Length: 120
Image (cartoon, rainbow, N blue to C red; front, top):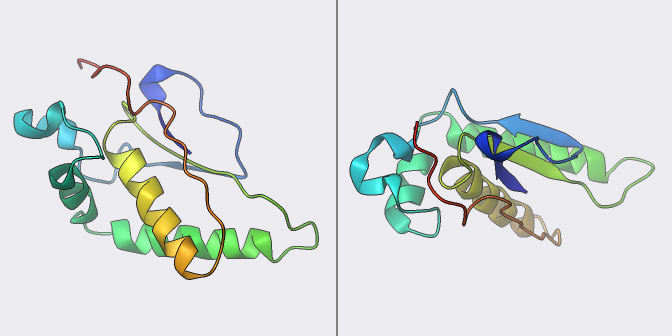
């Protein structure tokens, strides 16, 4: 589940990743600000950030550890950025794609993707 910290409390999850500080924020680019992760330029900008691919791999490894545990069941991963329109949903989609390649069934939710841009 992707979310924006500026829209409320993070959702309950087995693992919560804070993407606010370390990854490129398309919000700072006027041409990307009003786009969302549904737009290719936003996804390309986020995924070009150094370290993001490694973070996807690390999160996939953590999900695999949860799934292989004795109480295996649904695993909820929440990842948040400031507004929930760019970095977090892009990451959630990339992680879902990665987990599906491992044969997992994945549902993706974007809590704040369709909310208005937060002016900051």
